[in-house]
Length: 125
Image (cartoon, rainbow, N blue to C red):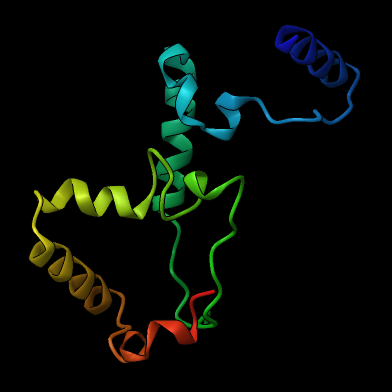
């Protein structure tokens, strides 16, 4: 069944139509990383490095949650590979104090100490 749906999407793409569902590899979902070719891995890492090199514009100060795609496990906070929570835990070595330090350091680095002093409930949905 899954194979047929993938074949239909491939046919739609070959005909110049949009896919009904993004390929798992393109969506960067967890279950498929073991099947990535070296080319796919390089492609996704290149995209990640481009995202990381983006300039932060000081004039863009509106507090808006990042676009959430898919379910909670694929959002900016919990994404299996790019999520902020996993990155913090990975660097913290089990220490809550290290997480506090990293968050404070990030606030200083981006010059947003005053903005993050407000209660979280005021801008978190």
